Picture 1: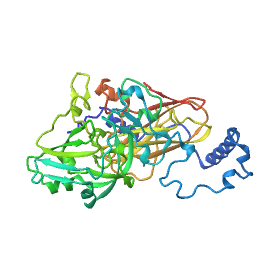
Picture 2: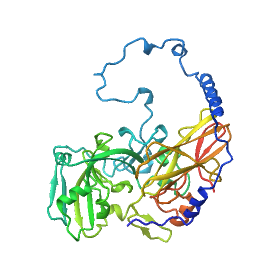
Picture 3: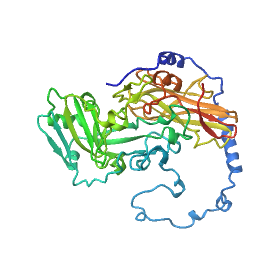
Picture 4: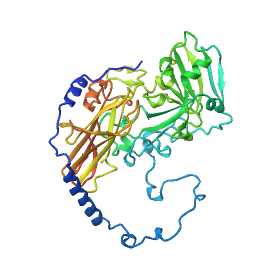
Length: 437
């Protein structure tokens, strides 16, 4: 089962977090109004790129002619002016595009729901294009009655809607030895959060009838890699879903169309896409993806196994290297936090590399094993900043510093790096990925 070792200073951090204060001024209403006026002036002064004939009091051409009718765009697309808000990849990270990853543009988003077309991808054998009419899900092994479900069979069963984050175990993996990739899209973008619609896995297993000696499941995908993982029965009976919709519409092909497994709070590798087979057994299978990969190599040469849970983590998405500060004055710091252990209880933000902390405002729903959006409002006068955030969840776990994490795990791992991220803000508003001692 998941290794629950925490950095030794976690309890101390949590106690300190309740008392630490910052000397930086918080914006008052008067400061906000003054800052807002300043932003308007700065915006006007910085509008050199705008076409003046389109600005007030002139009437712009889009107000003078009819636009496209409803039949022109039968499936909605973003504005052409948002063409750069896309998933991106880093080609040198992997040997093959078919077994690779693309990253969610976290710096371009707000709220907690990721649009379907921007959810990060991770494939081991490319995107499988599955004909929904030919799709079948088989449940067998240590069961009373082996079953085969069609997609329509699954849709006829009782369904639920749940919002969960999905994070790859390798998210932030390039940062174990130091700051590497300059942008939260690349350092933290192997995560997304959507509403899944599907059937509780517990319901399917109850229909099949798990034998008394059944303790583990082998869950297998229908892509070219045949990706498979061992899943404890206790987790399967708790909150796992067999999902076919995300944010209301059917799964995208890159997200496992027509059916995927949802394993809330656990690493993404076990959220099997194109789910085709579930076998019940009495012990784990120790497959390739849970022995040669997805284990955590420790300094003594041993590896932690079955480190399923994604621990509490956070990142400031703006300002960040891909979202620099454009103007002095009132500034909203925005970010995301999450925990595979349950709900996020609190998020703190530091402007000085962790010496002082202030409690951020969490806005929007706070759900079990889901992203939360946090904000902190400050006045920025152009002074350099070292921005950090740290998350605390309802179990009392506090997100560790990278040094605290390395003191226990070493630097040879790839997975489960949930250390505190630092962004260095320069006087000109540019932002860089750095580490502080």
